[in-house]
Image (tube, rainbow, N blue to C red; front, side):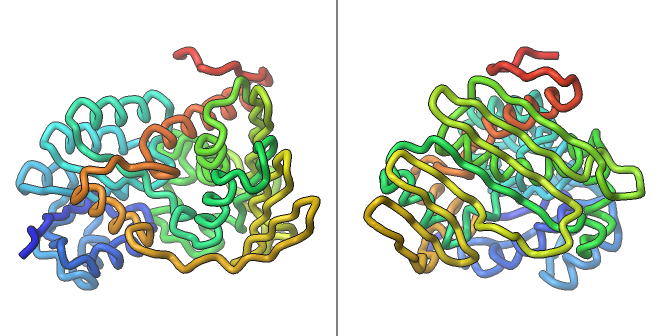
Amino acid sequence: MSRKYRLGIASLVHDHVWGELSHWATEPEVEIVAAGDVNQELRDRVKSEYSVPRLYESWQAMLEAEELDIVQAAAENSAGADIVEACAARGIHVVSEKPMAATLAQANRMVAAARSAGTLLLVNWPTAWQPAIQEMERRILGGEIGRLFYLKQRSAHNGPMEIGCTPYFWKWLYDEQLNGAGALMDYCCYSADMCARFLGLPESVTGFRATLVKDYPIPDDNAVIVMKYAGAFGLAEACWTQTVPYATPNPVAYGTGGSLAVHGDKVVIETPAGRSEIEPAPLAAPMQSAAQYLLHCLRTGEPIQGFCSMDVSRDAQEILEAGKRAADTGVTQALPLTAV
């Protein structure tokens, strides 16, 4: 019989955690043994929905009391570095929600801690488990549109509070220190990660952020980040004020041999030879969820690769920080960034 991995949940204030727990609960190799969070209501919920046997009033108390193999981190962006460092010191692997941190300095701490301890750190980007995005990734990396020179992704909805996120989630999303920004950090991150995956770190970044619509205090509700590479441009758009579906395909990529666009659940490729509409292949193991992929890497010894790797996610964090600095100063930022 294969071993059981003991899973603990470090905080419950990131609403993505409930979907992630549904994945962990289907993995026969995993036993969810504990959760730590300051909120009684959330502790009650995780006990009721997942029969978690031991609950603690903080993730720190959980780590002190439990012998764990894996931690699912679902805290504020600003807490990710503390969680990863504490877990790495105990030899515990971590799945942490996107983006990996609130600041570049915190992201660097996470990479350093995991690398030093030899533990795995998987940054969970929900887009990584979408069939159309996986199809797009395969075809771009396979060279089907030639050399990539432009990529744009827009991430948008009408705002965390308006779409029904819990107050435990949106209260910290609206806090500059805990989130890192507003919509810029929450939603420009997807394109930043995608550009980091396909193009690496840009030469320079400019950005804009503002509160254009909301009538209550938040860091920003719309943002744009522009990345300049030696031979490409990347564009990240974030919006917390979009009340309608996307008006255009999303994301969109142009290469020297054609274009690729995600239209809902399909991928469309256009080349000089014509247009192809592709039904993406269904998700297949081990790329169906963060839980499944982490367990695969633990079993095989393979490194975490792609969108969810800590190195790609760390580079995405540098793009986000550069975009925020540019937005706040009006000065385009050269990369690599210098400490501030």
